[in-house]
Length: 275
View (tube, helix red, strand yellow):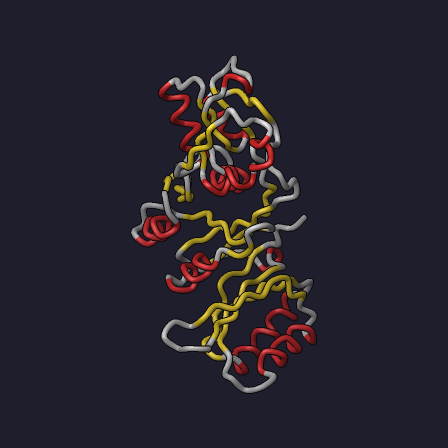
């Protein structure tokens, strides 16, 4: 049975690419125009899995998505680090001089700003989603209009890439996670990374003590993110990612932190997506 995967954005987006990388082309997509809608599709059972961007090397952490995963007790079962490539595409047979307007998501336009300074004849128009614009151009046969989107969108919607790699910063990577409502069934031999969440009291050195436990148990801390606890001023939850070589070392670290921390939660155990 094909899996139904909820993605933020449209077919042909980077979220779609991550879904295909994990589960192949024989998947059912549930397109969602927000991450809140994506979570709703998981909770109502109309999607089995969700793909969520969690952090970007330029924009940083996507804090609301950490909060969604925590609030709705979603489980992270996998991750992928995807290099973000922006390509200018439109109907076939056009050159850059033929393009009057480019419609795209504000972030994509911002990340390609330097390219468009060289083409002042092009009007930049903010739109809701990169891949959805590509789909609209194809469906409505819109000459003179171009989209900024991943190459997967050009393949799906039969568009031509007019200019390759138009992003200003070439090394731009986003971390995506695969989430589901049920606990993961990853085998121990498949696990070498975990996402954890905990709260600490205001006692001096409490965070340092936790970090020392991770170090003593040979955990490699790859991410730490603090998020304010709603309605508890100046109190924070900490979200951490750790990688490890031995599963038993990880279990030892968890057993100690469970005692030391408040509201400890395992958000997921999975295979490290960094090659």
